[in-house]
Length: 304
Image (cartoon, rainbow, N blue to C red):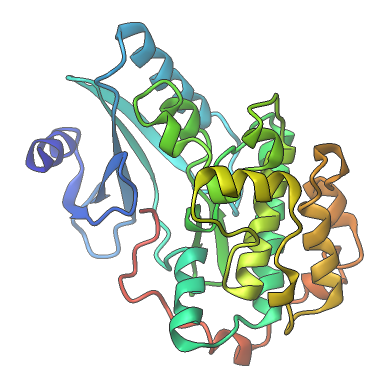
């Protein structure tokens, strides 16, 4: 199966096609280049199966991804290069490659090393994520499945790029919808209640990510989906695990984790606020010694 998919990519003119291990169950991932020359820019090709859809559903899914290419470029978003359909029902999506892993990798490394991520780095990553979200929301796009594992790192882990926006729309109509559209640990109360939603769901997810980066754990932990839903809708985050980070950052995280959607700040509001505005502490580049604590991801592949 993977050999057939790789052959399809080569037929489309891609060189140096390499299968990558994937952390997601709904897609196969390949590293590709348009040239075999040294220094050629690498891309990622994500292959999503739409076999369960009829012809109309497949066309709709392909159109949804094509619309993403119409988004204006932004330094904090993974760029979508092209997409195409190959029978029987395989959707290929080619996008830029981030080579420094993702925020989830950074959290896992912190756990292994028993060392917190320095606050200046957390602030930098969160501010860049806010910039990417402001751009997405300004163009009417809601991510809907924002999580630490699809916020990717590149340029020595100093640049953040949000990925997989729009993919959830494709998956909604497939057999993977229940498990992939909205990862439960990052789902807002309104998503848990299956209510109408807007960009506020992304702000809740960012609150979960802020909490995760600062404490190396998620704000709500449970042994079942029902228990998790109850905690998300009714319980307070596990603030007892918050100790080494500033009250300012905790206050922002608490705002993002407000149960009422319209009480959460927008990305634009936070970027204009004291912490993340130009001249604010969150807008100051982290010092070199802070970056020394964040080792490059050993596997060197980001969009997985």
